[in-house]
Length: 149
Image 1 (cartoon, rainbow, N blue to C red):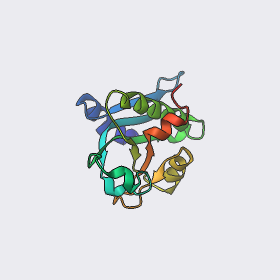
Image 2: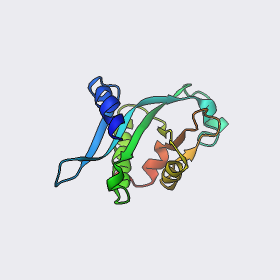
Image 3: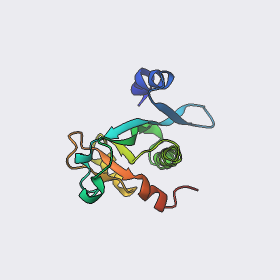
Image 4: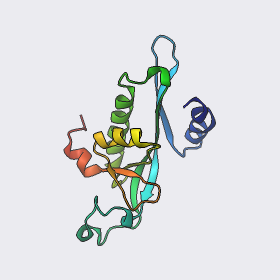
């Protein structure tokens, strides 16, 4: 996490490519975790479960989406609920933004099966036809979940 944050997160944030958000320890002001969000797109063909064929007609291809690009917690702070807090922050931010700038859903590219399981518990679904093995949660599902409070 530290290397990625130093090398990429700040430079991308400063360039307006993505937005890096952090949680810091109150006592030390050390970064405990980070999550990044940016604009993205997803090919309609990768969405057979999330968008039935009958609903694909007359939709843009690719569909606009929000990318949850990096969610990481420092190893010394894992297991304390920080990942949950950052994910909820990111999903709420994406949902709010989708009201002004259209977005079909939030996509992410989990690095391993542990991360894949974490996202699945929060409603993300596999996109089996996506070569990067992305997962998605649709904005309509986020709206129905009551997340927007």
